[in-house]
Image (cartoon, rainbow, N blue to C red; front, side):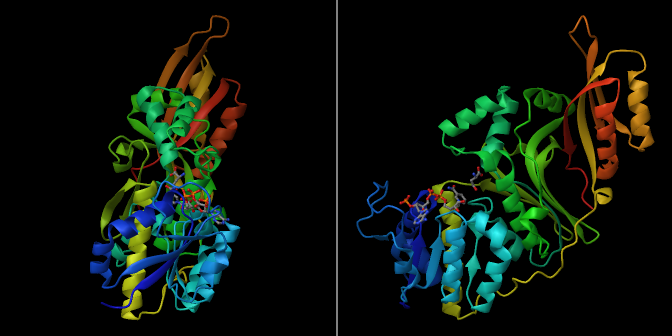
Length: 435
Ligand code: NAP
Ligand code: HSE
C-alpha cells in the first residue's frame, strides 16, 4: 500500500461533518480509487467545546488555524468554514506553503478565484472548488472535463435552492412570498438571514464562477447584473401559468459573437424548457455547447452529504494527481479578455403587466409606443378590474424578441404615459433562443 495522504479540514459544520462521514464511511472505496489511505489529521473549529452531532473521539479539533497550516505532514487543506477574509487568507497561505486546497466557498472563489488559481499554478498546487457551485452536482467537472473539447455558448442555471423552493411553493400552492420564505426558514432550507439568497447575490457568485470557467474569460462578480425574487407576486405566477410559462430565478451566462452577458434575475421559461421542471430546493445547470448542443446537470444544490460528496470527489482527484506526480492547476489563466455585451446586443422577449385606464384609445396609445421601437406583441391578455369610480384593466403583454435598449426605452415611457396607471411587474422571457 502506498503512503497515505493527510488532510487538514477548516470547519466542522454542515459540510465539514459530511466530509468526515464520507471519509470514514467510504474509506474502502476511496482507497480503491486512489490506491492509498486518506486520513483527516486536524480540524479547525471556532469552539472545541461545542456539542457535535458526530463521533469526534478520534478527531483532533483545534481553534488555532496555524496548527493546521504549519503542519508539514498535512498535504491537502479542505476549506469548509465559509466567510471571506479569513478563509481567503488561509487558502492563500496553504497554497504558498505547497498544500493543495479543496474548497466549497463560492464567496471566496467569486471574489478572489482568479488570484487564487494563479497562486495555485505558481506553487504547483491544485485548487479545486466543485462544491462552490450547485453543491453535489458535478457541473464544474462536467464543464472542465466532460465538455473540454467543446465551445460553450450558454449556461443557464437554477443555482440557488432557497429561491427555487420559494418560487415552486408560490406557483404550486398559490401562497405569497413572505409566507413561503418563513416556512423555508423553519424547514432549514433558508438561512436566518436569507438576504444573499433572495436578492440573487448567492446565484450571482455561482454564475461568475461558471462564466469564468465556461468561457475562459476574466469576468468579475461585479459584471453580473443581479435582481432577486423579493417583488415576485402570486398574480405574476397566475399569469405565467395562463400563458404557459414557469417563473424561476435564473443565472444566465450567454456568449454571442465573442461577447458575453451575465445576469441573475427572475425569468419566465416556456413550460417545456428543461429548467422549468426543476422543483423545490433542487438545482440544475443547463449548458449549451456549440458541438454537443443541449446538456443539463441536475441534483441537490446543498446539504451536508451532497456537498461533501463534491468535496471528497475533488479530494480524490487531488490524491490521484499527487500519486501521478503532476504539478497543480495548469489552465487557470483565462484565454479571452473580458468583452461584455452592450444593451443593444442583448436580445430577449419580455413580459410586462400593467394597470391601464379602461377607456377608448388605450390600446392605440400602447401599440403606437411599441411600434415606434419596432417591438411586436407575441401574447396579450386584458382583464377588467373591479373599480366603479375608476374603470381600469389589467393588461399583460409578452413581446417578440427585441433588444434590451429598446425595451428599456418602452418601459420608461410606459411609466409616464397618461393611460397607464401602474407598471405592476416586468420579467425577461428566456429559453427559446440559443445562438
Ligand atoms: P457552517 O455549518 O456554519 O460551519 C462552519 C464551520 O466552520 C463550523 O464548524 C465553525 O466552527 C467553523 N468556523 C467558521 N468560522 C471559523 C473561524 N473563523 N475560525 C474557526 N472555525 C470557524 O457552514 P457550512 O454550511 O458547513 O458551509 C461551509 C462552506 O460551504 C461555506 O463556504 C458555504 O458557502 C459552503 N457551502 C455550503 C453548503 C451547505 O449546504 N451548507 C452548500 C454548498 C457550499 P464551530 O463549529 O465551532 O462553530
Ligand atoms: N444558500 C444556498 C442555496 C446554499 O439556497 O442554494 C448552497 O450554496
